[in-house]
Amino acid sequence: MREGETTVSINKQAIVYILRWAQQFPYVCYFNPQQTENYPNGTFTHQLAIGHREIKIQGNDHFNKLKEYLNNHQEQKLYGYFSYDLKNELEKLESNNPEEINWEPMGFFEPDCIFHFHGNQVIIESEKVEFYQKELDKIIKNNKTSTTFISKKINPIIAHTSRKAYLETVNILKQHIVEGDIYEINYCINFSTEIENFDPIREFLKLSEHSPTPFSSLLKWEEKYVLCASPERFIKLEDGKIISQPIKGTARRSEDPEEDYLSKLALSKSEKEQAENMMIVDLVRNDLAKSAMPGSVKVDEFFGIYSFRHVHQMISTISALPKDRISSVDIIRNAFPMGSMTGAPKIRAMQLIEKYETTKRNIFSGSIGYFNGLSSFDFNVVIRSIFYNQQSGKLHYQVGSAITHDSVPEEEYEECLLKAHAIQQVLSRAH
Image 1: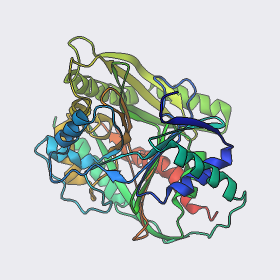
Image 2: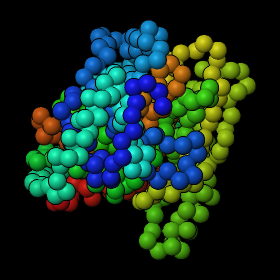
Image 3: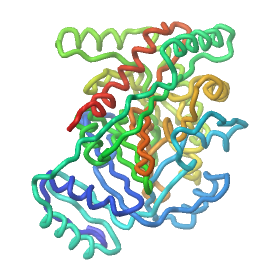
């Protein structure tokens, strides 16, 4: 064990107490991976980072300033996020739609303490490990097994894009495809409400239970929260290997085993879904090639079918070996934003996203994750998420699907509603 670490035995309920205690910190990042069995290249590790020290990045040029920071602090671990609208710093693009979700373009913090959870044990990693060990002892000792909850009060959910408008827009986007403007585009819609007595910890744990995923995360940034049940990895660097795992292709699960099997089989054989997936695989290969040793980019798995609680997903895995001396920040920048949330070609797709979506994406379809110094990182795709502002009581979630030449607008709309199902189930429960 390295200096600055100690191991403490805990029970499962203690994690809830630790999460509640952590809310006193302005910056909190909790990774709660589930559905982890046989997931290629692993999942997020089960950990909680807390901190006071945000990395201040003023103005534009966020990627270069983050790169400079990491170059000067090569062993520093950082936790945080990239927002989708950083695209405007990478290409000649704009984001002028209404900003319903209001986060800065990028945010990272230095952890005061990291709790690594392994079954009934937690490893405490900190420069003040004795202090946090005593804090953990107090947390476990002072909490009781029962807690009184106040029922949340939720106002009606507002769809920022009506079904009619959605169908009309999909047909317009299909016309762009017919004209050769794009091959595929990820088109998203936004829902919002206002809510009282919303408990982010409790609701996140409910979301994780209702929709367990390998890249689940809870991010607290002062008064704002992301409750993320993401099934998708954006990009990872570990042991000198870059990995990206885009998802394109979705099928509804069934409680009937035979129907469920047939749904999974149909997804695996769907030419439409394979075409969607292939276009994004080609895009990701090109993105990784910018950072990779010549000839090292390869597709480890085409069209893998993986089953989650509510859906089957088609996932491909692309890997590459990084160029000598390339910065980890540059590897991310060269692939950002992820192709699964834009379309192809990427720049034109992003221009049309700006034109036809009704709200700014902000942190939605961005990425949450962590740097382990300069040599490794892991980041998800921010989808299947609740965005909550504790100060205003406003809550948002967004969903989308890939539009191609063969898309049926009504089916794409149903796919959006399917992806929103877990969130709506959590919000509709009184307890």
